[in-house]
Amino acid sequence: MTESGGPPVVPAVPAVLTAPFTRRAWQETAYCALSFVPSLVGVTLIAVIVVALGCALTLTVLGAVPGLLFLVAGLALARTLAALQRRLARGLLDEHIAEPPRPEAGRGLVDGVKARLGDVAGWRAIAYLLARLPVAVLGLWAVTWWVIGAFHVLAPLRWAAGQRDFSLISPIPGLGLDPRSLGSAFAAAALGCVFLLAAPWLTRAFVAVDRRLMRALLAPGAVADRVRELEETRALAVDDAAERLRRLERDLHDGAQVSLAALAMSLDMVREQLDDRDRPELHRLVETARDNAADTLTELRDLSRGLHPPALDAGLPDALATLAARTALPVDVTADVPDRPTPAIESLAYYCASELLANVIKHSGAARCDVDLSTGDGTLRLTVTDDGHGGAHITAGGGLAGLVQRVRTVDGELTVHSPDRGPTTVKVRLPLHA
Image (cartoon, rainbow, N blue to C red):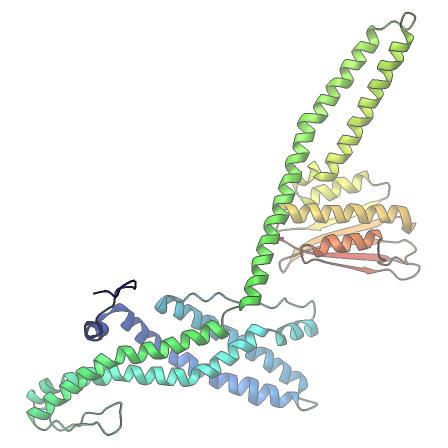
C-alpha cells in the first residue's frame, strides 16, 4: 500500500509485532547493555580525576602541577572511552563516527601539557560522557523491559511447575502481579508480551538520542572535516606538482638535452670540415652556433637539476651528501632517516638545504658547516649550523622569508637562531607526508 507520489507506507501493526525479532532490535539492546558500564565507570573516573582532583588542585599553589597532570590524564581517559564508544556504535549500530585528530605533541613537557589541555576533542568527549549518563541509565532501563517481559511470558509454565510463591515485578511501578492463580499467570504472560513488544521501541528511542549526542560531540565537526579535506587536497596537489616536475626533468634530460648535445656534436663535425682560408666567416658562424648550443645545454642541465635533482632518486641523505660534496665549503652531513618522506617533502627539504648552504657561502663568512637530518614523531627535521659571524634574521622579501613561505605550504616551520658573532642555526621542520 502506497500513498500517491510518496514512499511505501509500512503497516504499523506488523512492524510492532515483528520488532522484537529483528536484528536491529537485538543489536540496539546489546549496545544499551554493553555501553552502560563503560559510561558509568567513565563518568565516575572523569568526575574524580578531572573535577575533584584536577580542577580542585589547580586552584592551589602547591597542587597546580599535579592538578594539570590530572587534567591531562582525564582528557586522555575521556578520549579512550570515546574511542570505545565509537567502536561499539560502529560494530552494533553501524554508526560510523570519524575519530577527531589528536593534538600535536609539544617538544617539551610544558608544550606537551599545553597542547593536551587545548585538545578540544578531549573536552568534547568529557561533555559527551557527562551528557550520556542519563541516556545510558534510561537505555539500561529499556533493557530491563526485555528481561522482565521474558520472565512474565514464562509465568504460566512456572505456575504449572508449582512455582507459585513468587511475585512478578514490572519496569513500571504499580504493575506487579501475584500469579497464585492460573488466570493471573496468563495475565502476567500477556503483560510480558506487551513489555516485549514495547522494549525495542524504547531502546530505539534512547539509541536515537545517543546517536545525536555522538554526532554532535564525538565527531570531528564541520570545521575539522573541512580542514582535513583541505589538507588532503593540498597533499594531492603537492604530490601532483612534484610528480609533474620529475616528469618534466626526465623529459628535458631525455629529450631537449640529448637533442642539444647532438646538435653541438654535429656543429663540431661541421667546423672540423671547414677550411679557415676559404670560408673564415662561415667558420666563425659555426663556432658561435656551437658555443651557443653548449651554453644552452649547460643552462638546461642546471634548470632540470633545480626542478628535481636526480640524486633524490636514491633518497634525501644521498642527495644531501652529493650537494655537500659540490659545495665550496667543508660540510659535514649527518642523516638518520628510518622513515622516508614523500617525494614532495624530499624535494622541499633538498631545496631548503641548497638555499641555506648558498646563504652560508654568500653571507656568513663561515669556515665550515654542519647539516643534520632526522625523522621522528611524524616529522622531518633539517638543521643547518655554521660557524660564521651570525646576525642572520628573517626580513620581508629576503631569502629566508621565501623559505618560510615555502615551508608553510605544507604546515612546516622554519626558525633561525643567529646571535652576533655566531654560530647560526636554522631549523626546518616538515611533515613526512604533505
